[in-house]
Image 1 (cartoon, rainbow, N blue to C red):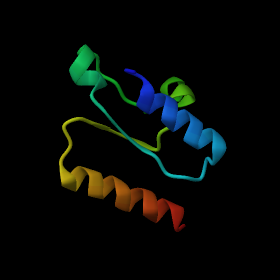
Image 2: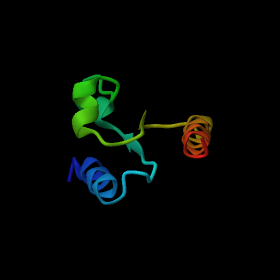
Image 3: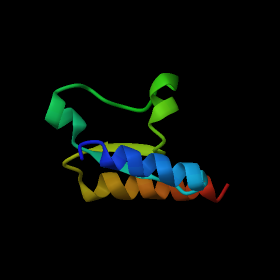
Image 4: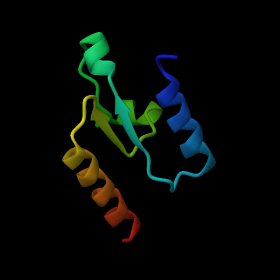
Length: 74
């Protein structure tokens, strides 16, 4: 399903909100619509801690992982 990643993310965060989730999506590529989770409205239904647009580079993913781990350790 097109929204399977969003649905999985929602269920993970519902079960345990402290688990960091990075959502990697092609929604912008597939639809042509800019998509982010920076506004309060978007964050209300996109439960990911970070969103990356496909295709991603390793350094992007590593930077987000490091950031989320640093936040968790605070």
